[in-house]
Amino acid sequence: MSKTTYKELLGAGVHFGHLKRKWNPNMAPYIFMEKNGIHIIDLHKTLAKLEEAANALKQIATSGKKILFVATKKQARDIILKHVGDINMPYVTERWTGGMLTNFVTIRKAIRKMDAIDKLLKDEEGSNLNKKERLFLSRQREKLDKNLGSIKDLTRLPAAIFIIDIRKEHIAVQEARKLNIPTFAMVDTNSDPTKIDFPIPSNDDAAKSIDAIMSVICGSVKEGLEERQQIKAKRQQEDTANQAKAAEAKSKKEAAEVEAAQTES
Image (cartoon, rainbow, N blue to C red; front, side, top):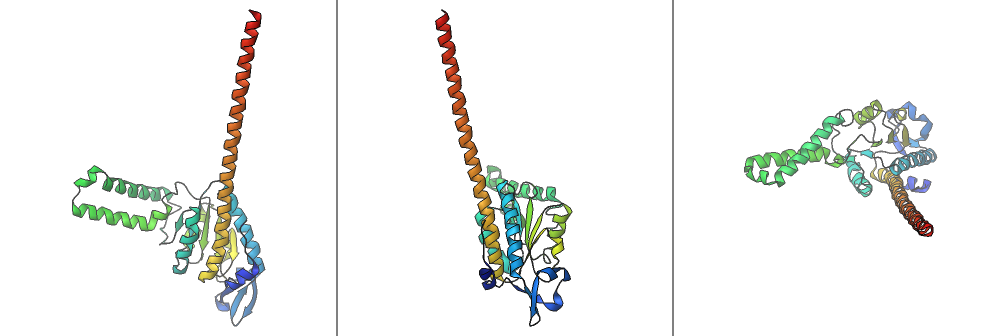
């Protein structure tokens, strides 16, 4: 599993929480101390929770299921694109569209509409459209792509959802909980960890902190995907070997039958 150290998390500022007056009491088990009016997160507990979440996500990736990453806050967008792009998982970095999970059928219709527009603009039929019609379709396609392009390959509900800042993405959390989709998240001292199945106590505002956590999470998912490929390759080798053995056994049996027939005659 992809790992990090206490020192690396400390250097990334993962331990910095919010002002004491903004805290959520449910975060008390994960708070180490208060310093200058700011809560300091216990990084030993962060490491433990991070490892637990990373292992669970690795297993999901190994099973071949999809994990949806959600982070619409400005400082997290580029980090999500950098890490999630390497593992080919769906993500949301623009506005969360209400019903993206709970009304998934309608979302899929919108994605199919986007595909239909692409096909129309490329086909000969599209050449008959006038300039105004083509411009209208292009703008409609751009709007759909901005909000849904990154989940285009999500043909069914994700097996899990990973969220950065559960206060900002509270609608995504609600939808996932309603559908019993396992939730993983970076949870700061101003948030409620009881709403998340796999909370990772951490600074969800600083870019370095987000990058440090995402590096471990996506590294573990990548390992899971690689293991899946190895398992598939091994199965193919075993299938090929079994087929070869079966063919050899069949050939020997046929040869023995021919030999027996010749002996009888």
